[in-house]
Image (cartoon, rainbow, N blue to C red; front, side):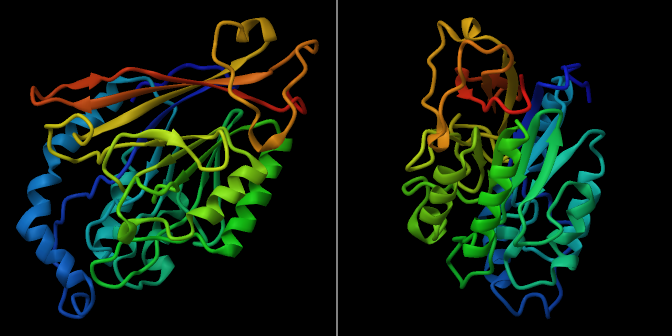
Length: 332
């Protein structure tokens, strides 16, 4: 993959999600004595015709041709959450020659499995070493903060939770990264906003997540799970909330076709540079940087949404742009 060649203060990220990597081996009888049996039936009857290797290959080739510094993968690498799938996903992650930040999704928690035999296998590859501890990957002055919302659920349910302990750790992590002057991009699988998925698939403690973001602040939140490209805000804050389609979805409707988001984070060094752009209100209730002082005053974040067309090529949708104020400490 080509790198962007950016300075240490800026970064180009590839946000992709829900690749549902090809199912190479079928689970054993013991592994099927769970919700996995129903999911395997769904995969055989429908999902294997929706999530295909061709679209995923096209997305990865498009990322390869684009200059990116790191990948942010927001869950659902597996289909049934079996040990063999987690090992295959680890091998898939090793193919990338740059930093990766990866979190689990609901399919990665299809049934209870020891963490070190499941998503923990990705810990040394940019994943989470502890399911209840936010994981931080830094790229210069940009911090990717991974949050786990994946939990085993009953049949026909696909919701998630972050839990009180992890929410408190997230607040502490975001405060720390703020004092370090970093641009904080939070990754979570389930969309933390009501209405983006049906209730049985929702983040069931979305209010707790929203409170954490409102208290500590974040410059951007990325999610997967919905298999749709959406943009909104985290409730109770001004933090942009960006969803992406499944990286392996068959082409067709552009709001669902396979794709990825190319996210460019750039520093704004003088208040004069901010003029002409729509300045967002300060997040977390903190005061805006003083225009009289030199140094960084904001992060300009651009999101280029790329989707697979029926012609087999990735096409760019209208670009999104956000201007996010940053704190003064450590950046002047």
